[in-house]
Length: 151
Image (tube, rainbow, N blue to C red; front, side, top):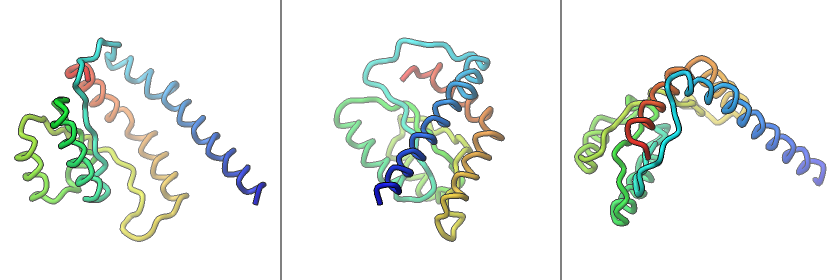
């Protein structure tokens, strides 16, 4: 049992290291090429993003947004991973409820269940494919949002 815990810890640290390398060697240079520059963030303003793999994530986002509103924190932009996954009635309700926010479809999400079952190797493979084949599109959108809204 001790060896298994040790092995899991090494695997987690390895994956975190790979993620760090991906950000430093792939996403950050891409962002710089697309015009990203450091900026002074606007106080009490955030950009909110939401996974669209299930409506539960959207309901959680709504709860968080209500807390942000109560605290006077602005969220001028709501990024949706894949807007087409949301039922039209839900998207319409979100737009009505949070009318001051601009909704942006990232059209970028790692599908982790394919509607069947969870399989870690499939999740890792899908994440790898998304990160390597579609990272330019995602980075371009994120750079634009960060430079325009400065959260």
